[in-house]
Image (cartoon, rainbow, N blue to C red; front, side, top):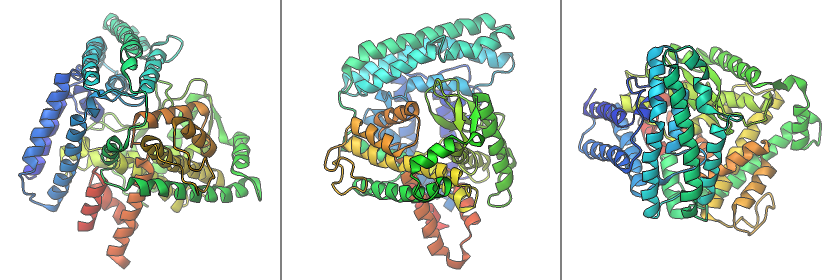
Length: 556
């Protein structure tokens, strides 16, 4: 490895020491008994490391094509991370899906629990939870004093999440975590004390959000163009024309809904509407699974079968990546997500579902495509293969470089690919894929429209409030009209968009750029283009922004 790779590897080691929570997320051993310093000084120290590394990497001449790609990826990511820190985004962001609180809470899902050392680490972190939240309060107070604070609505919604997490009749996440472990461990009293401390601290943090921070919160949830442009570039790793993309969202959603009407006729008969087809599918007992455990088992079986089918045919899946775990998350927030394997694969990649309270029946026709998205050939293949490729990628590329547009765009591309490969020939499963794609297209419209407060086109294909300007209320009405998602999950979706500007469009826009990159490769290669080889070369580049991705592919 050359100087750029050496620098990247040193950065990971220094970063892990400054971010023990992050180290656990990416599977670096040795930090599981510590939490991040969430004080202003802690954030500043991490930013300073990023700043020093970026300054040094700018002076190095790459020694190979692989190092050039690594250099461009690091320059793009680290530069945008510093831009976000300078703009106050990193230290002020509190939303229903991301904040310092969420990072602290979720890290416990990824920690080992077997053995006394693992349980000692859990007890240590639980007992550190209150002090970490006190540090975080200081950071949020300082950011608010500087005029950087999340919207009042988001702060109240996160306070409600705190209520649910600590409710003994609800998620009860910390006591639920240690309930079994404390009875089997000599550290039982420390674990129970830690669970009580973390529970009390979370409840108190919810009150802090309600009574102290929310009154300072922004009245308007819209980010505005300047903030949104930075957020969009960060989540995509690419600069796009937001107004063109907004217009494209309407065209893409109309295309998908036309395709859905065609498939609906196959399901429920000629002339059937999409809603009639959905009703027919939901009334089919063969497509319903009752109970969370049974649904988890169904996901696991489908994920395992897909890996077996695709390995050696359309992809060469490394042995370590042929294992995935499907999990029900300990919270009821409504999110579906993937967490990568540890560096040594002792902890496998996992697909998580935070099932909303009260939801006990699951429609498989909706979720076949979700398994492809979160599993193989989606996130699990992409992320797992990146972790494996130590001979091709430095440690920063393998563990730290995550770009939403690249990762989520690939996962959405993977859903479409499975349709191309014939895995969605069942009309119900294909309607589920198209419905998921339609949700992502609606996100493009609603997210850009609400945050930029754009006018709704007078000639929009849905005749939806032509000429009016987007508001959260219109966003809710539009989503309900175009997305077949239970209201409790759809409400979480809308809150997520409003609190995390620019992230939601990264799925569909990322897929669009992946498809453009494939067409560009076809044009370059001509008759020599091979789809399996394109996928291998693209994934072997690791995670990177979508603009650096296209440049790297063009040089292959």
